Image 1 (spheres, helix red, strand yellow):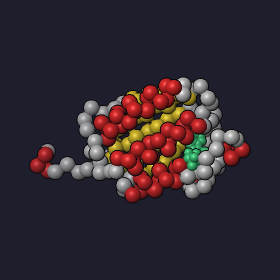
Image 2 (cartoon, helix red, strand yellow):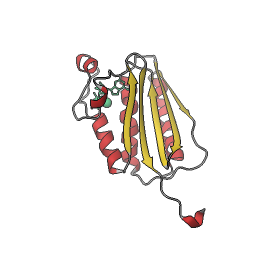
Image 3 (cartoon, protein in one colour):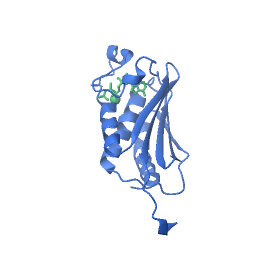
Image 4 (tube, helix red, strand yellow):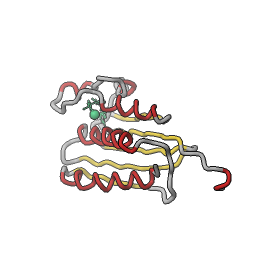
Length: 158
Ligand code: ATP
Ligand code: MG
């Protein structure tokens, strides 16, 4: 899969839906060159959707801005999905990829959810030899990043 192309396609597809929900979605820093990884498209899509769904769910309604970037770092394709939502506390952050874990404010509100979205995302990333993580600050927002190893170029292809 060429992630440069795939991410762009997914974003284009999502854009319409998000605009309807009043979500501001921006795709920035898309590399011009292909970034080839070995991956299952449907599963990758699941990961992206789970992260984006959270970004929307844990932001104030009508005031959700999501930025997606794709970069090449150290032989990996790295996707970052950043929101300016409610953020995650330092205590909760290490647990958000655990099954059935929902951080405090989420448990008490009507957003709903089973606490599985990120656990599934993590499992898929591990199946692909990749990694997923997050940084966040209460009140500032959350950035979820996912890294997939790039396919090695054959020597002959230079
Ligand atoms: P599900 O995805 O199964 O519907 P969920 O969204 O609660 O339920 P996860 O997606 O696994 O579960 O997320 C786990 C918890 O991490 C959430 O309940 C929420 O507390 C916190 N969280 C995840 N993403 C964000 C985000 N972008 N901003 C703030 N908190 C988040
Ligand atoms: Mg979720």
